Image (cartoon, rainbow, N blue to C red; front, side, top):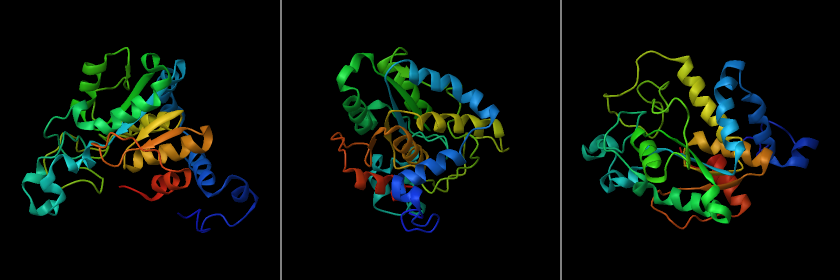
Length: 250
């Protein structure tokens, strides 16, 4: 938004040549260059996704409020039923979820894999331990790539939760102390997403920003899933997709 409206970079040669979206993606890539320690964590994941065709998938379970219809009708703090959120490590794990709960993501991944579906691997990042386990159970270790520190909480550095998608739940599986190593591990997954050639993203800013970088630097094929139940896997126009990646979601 800032680039598009000229607040950060005026209409100079770089912006005119690349466009606002790709300028923002390139700038974010430079700002997010990893430290030596962070890169050492990311390197095995980068190697894994480069060895053979891979579709990268990020699923933000904490934003899956459509799994409980009551949560979509009333504010979270007014509904006890809303506290039974999906298994969400950022705000406390509740109801376990499975690949059957994320049909939209599966449809998009299969759509991106259709040319040689059997040989394409899937790199899975998700803030749900039960979902990560079920991906391996349903599709097998030969198909699924997970970070080597699984099943550690995906966003364990955010003690107590830090997303606007959270609730007032006080119970949490997260540590009380800030853990810089956990932040590096989470960054390593984001950095890997940003280097994917095909990526399925959530409304979460975590994967949307990674997709901005991947699309800007690698012309990645991106699918954005708004509703986890939507199996259509629509691919919006480039301009519409870029707007959604930058401005849409949490």
